[in-house]
Image 1: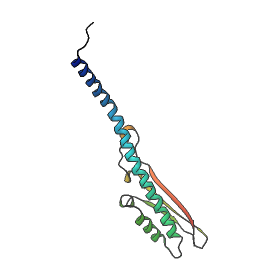
Image 2 (image 1 turned 45 degrees about the horizontal axis):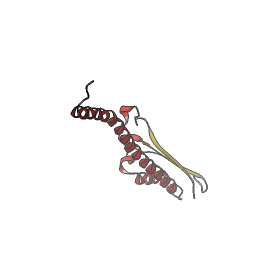
Image 3 (image 1 turned 90 degrees about the horizontal axis):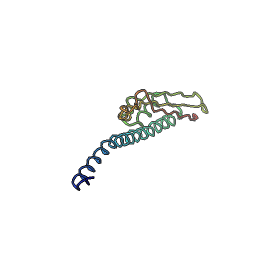
Image 4 (image 1 turned 60 degrees about the horizontal axis):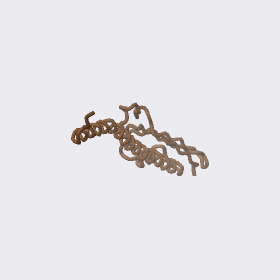
Length: 136
């Protein structure tokens, strides 16, 4: 039996390392893309929750109109989410009545759809927040 030379074994190890890299690199890319996409979505979710809370606080004030509440919600959202946001406002007429502000934003406006090749698409998914408070 012939023992392989040192140069042959080094070449063989390099080939195996290249194959391992080719197999592991796509999995690492998927994990990094997922981490990036979900961190953007979590940040956007916080922005949507803050906007709904700001709108509800504004809606509790006496003499505030629905347009004023929607303007406050849009002012609180960042520019990427502002244009695609759907805002619903229900106000009470009397002090002590509940007010409700709901904000719905498509996830695709918050983050690029990086994971669609592996079957996780943001198409048709939304960030949603609803806040209820009592009118002053």
